[in-house]
Length: 368
Ligand SMILES: C[S@@+](CC[C@H](N)C(=O)[O-])C[C@H]1O[C@@H](n2cnc3c(N)ncnc32)[C@H](O)[C@@H]1O
Ligand code: SF4
Ligand code: SF4
Image 1: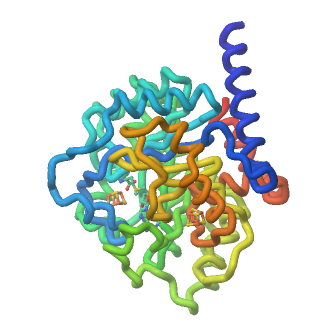
Image 2: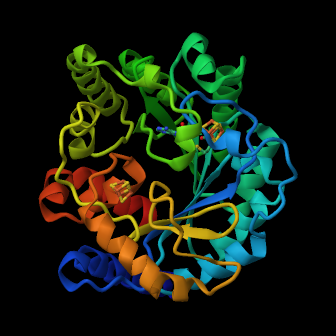
């Protein structure tokens, strides 16, 4: 009885918050809290990926200035009472933080859905066990192709595919269905023809989902590692469209959930530089907190709205800077990143009707 009552109260809080987020474009009044927060728990990273400049911003210095676990848990736990549903802990490489489990268990105690997004190379049986003990709901392992020649070359270190897949298998075996495993897969010139094959690998490793992340050069730190050779040329986009359709078919056949249809259909137009019409919900239903506590609607907008170590989150969320950034977000067509764009698609009636399976999956996953 008390379990279903507390779940019902949580569901109502989150649904009310989602409705306010969906109405933002008309009401111009932000919800009490984001629905999802992406937290960069560290800048440290053990890989040297071609597509990501984060590792260049941390050059072996001490991890000074990272927000303490207790601060993150206090801020995000407070937001859970206002309608925050889920938190994604990423980095840098989040498994390089020795107190990651402390953060996970604190967020779970606050009733949040918790995902850890990792390159998987440090995920062994012991770490899988401690994350599960802390209560993690989902681990997303980045696998950018089924062959070493592709994955290791993109990730800048030999042996990373084997380690990532071994880590993914260790996690799914230890979880035994109690938590979900997913693959995050970059989509770029070097690997788009291998997406269906990567889906087969995901399924064989025990994953229940595979999310596509089309290569972008949007984040300020991407400018440190921009690699135009990863962009498909105009003459390759037709083949990419076929490969994406083949991937979606294969994923459905394997029972793997993936991005919504509208999102996948938007990948080739995005690479082709065509204007898109989907709304962006950065700063409204989703936001980023970086390793040092700065809050951004999305990382792409280089300007933070405030810092959670210095000011209460609520003051930042309701402040003039965040509101000014939100108004720019609403009209922004600057990227096609799944983490910011897909929540907008879920809350747009036309896209949600077309993608009702993805909507149901998200409701089940984050509110179930
Ligand atoms: C920033 S990483 C952090 C977590 C962890 N280090 C990892 O690699 O999974 C999170 C995800 O963002 C993806 N990513 C990084 N830079 C990207 C870019 N320029 N375009 C698309 N995806 C990118 C990574 O491949 C990874 O799947
Ligand atoms: S994608 Fe992940 S593993 Fe690769 S450099 Fe960026 S943070 Fe590190
Ligand atoms: S579309 Fe949204 S997530 Fe992308 S750059 Fe613009 S505001 Fe940021």
